[in-house]
Image (tube, rainbow, N blue to C red; front, top):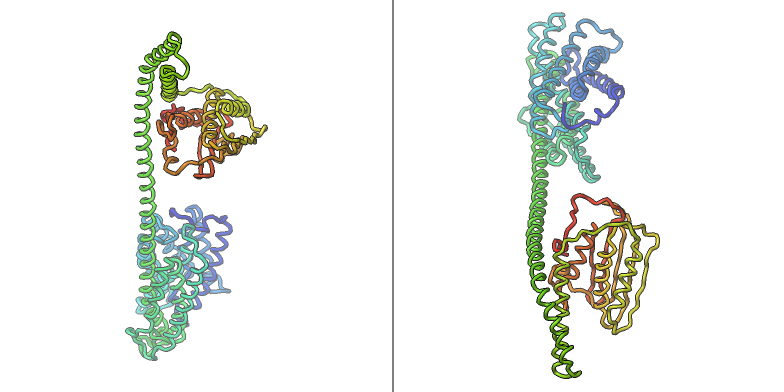
Length: 586
């Protein structure tokens, strides 16, 4: 079966069969109208193309019904009002055998696709069903007429040529048209492309009509006027591929055949111009002369259309592969950067834990010694000894804060997730930050906490630490005072479970783009006494809850931190619980 689908293959069998009967009957009637008086065969036999198309599109189990219908319908449509005779039935069976062999070969050896967008499809159609298969019907057909005495044996060769050319042209004109225009894998044209096709067909008809009317009375095979159709066929093949080419070929055939039957144009021969004496034979010879021209034009156009289609598909495939390769390279580079960052952060974490462990004991000794000196010496207030001991105590506290921060950064986080309300945790962290932070300027704190937010799986202690850190940063960003806005709500996530959303907005100095790029890096800080670990620990805590933290800031206007936490306990497997040192950069 062809790989691409045809619209008729989606239809119910009865509807598709009814359409086949209608097309076959009409095409048989039209083929008889194209048969010159006194001749037995038509120079163009469209039913051969209709039956071939039906067999190519139908399932194998429907072939017997189609062949039987064609066997009976062809004699009835060819000779209305007369019952089929053994001779007409034999001719009809001969035509059915031709279509059967052609369909079998195309499906078995070519794998024909209805869109005719491959060179192998067009070459198979032209070679097997246009050149080879008509021989199967022409040879016994002409022989049957000779046996029944309808034609003389001396006229056998001429009748064979007429039979062969008629079936071949019927396939060439009809089958590609029905196949390509019903294919589902073809691209839909925009309106301007449809208008362009209409202009092309109109210009082709007018040009060919004028060429055949202005052609000289004496026929000449070298007259240039008929070849004015070639630019339009090329136009159709380059712009509209198989569908446009088949329409242009049908329009060219309709105009040229009509003029030739009327004795107009360079292909029209008179009885004196042929070896045959009758005008009917001259008309048949004229049509045969014309068919060679149409076959050359049609075959060239279909092959060019297939070549253009293959080139377009190759270009699209190349562009798609290039895009996929570029995406893969970007993902590979990002993965490599992430691996390098994780290895570096792991090394930093191990070093931090080692340094903190080694520094903590001496630092405790120094702190105890400072306290002992103050207790034993009892220096006077504001004296040099008092100031020096005070400086030593402050530095010991700062180093202790740094050591604790290093331990928090290096310690793997394993939060105990329990379903709890978020509102009290947010309120507690905010109150703690307001109590501990000195506020030289006036502050306005606004709360927008939605009481309808469902309980979330969280570790209250860890989340309190992360929120407290963010609240302290927001307050410190407003040394002259300002407004702190705290929000709590929930939102549906298109890619996962519903989420709780916490927003912290200040009207402080904001964050510059250069700082934003390194905001969550460990040991990066813009504060004189900062350790640069606060936001890295915040991100680690949030990601340990399988959430995300994001920041937006405008220098001089303020900053907003947004935290999203899942409201369900279902955790994707591809999101491992990471320690703060594995937190990705902002």
